[in-house]
Amino acid sequence: MIITVTGLPGSGKTTIIKQLSEALHLPWYSVGDLRGKMAKERGITIDELNTIGESEAFTDKEVDDYQKSLGHTSESFVIDGRLSWYFIPNSFKIFLDVDPKIGAERIFEASKKGERSDEESYTSAEEAAQFISNRVASDVKRYQKYYQVDFLHRNNYDLVLDTSSITAEEATRQILEKIPKS
Image 1 (cartoon, rainbow, N blue to C red):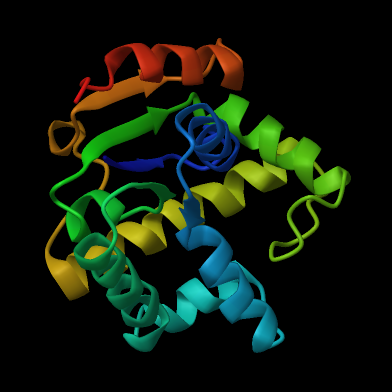
Image 2 (cartoon, rainbow, N blue to C red; image 1 turned 45 degrees about the horizontal axis):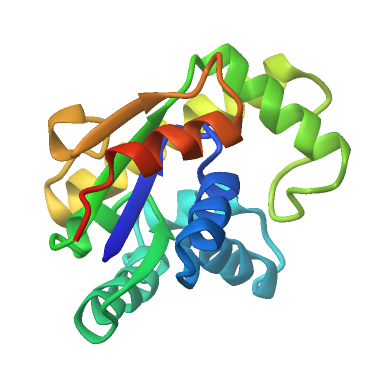
């Protein structure tokens, strides 16, 4: 079984894929981690990489090709990425939603702990919210330009889950209940 997880920043994607991986005994992959590594190798932030990606396709194509390859060569894994559902159509597709203010708070708190080394250091949740808004707008622009898809359309997914008022553990439990049994 392949499970693809996408969603809004701060919705808990990475935490939840790790929990799903552990519960299902499957390997996990994070496209965000791959893009973060790409940014760090270039000495820039993920937001700067996204801006470059608005005119240079390589910033998306490298990780998108990697996702496609995984979908063709591996039978079972969990992956988070904005377009994983698109590049791995034979997956159970999950969208994690979150109230933007709550997502910004979560990202700001993670930033204070140094958990997001590929991002700006935010001085407030409000500042994080602005960067998140810009990031989502950049994602939408790039994905429309390169693939003519919108990851925000909830009808692309088998399951849409709002994580605003639940813990990552509760979200994982709800997902496990909804995953089709093979």
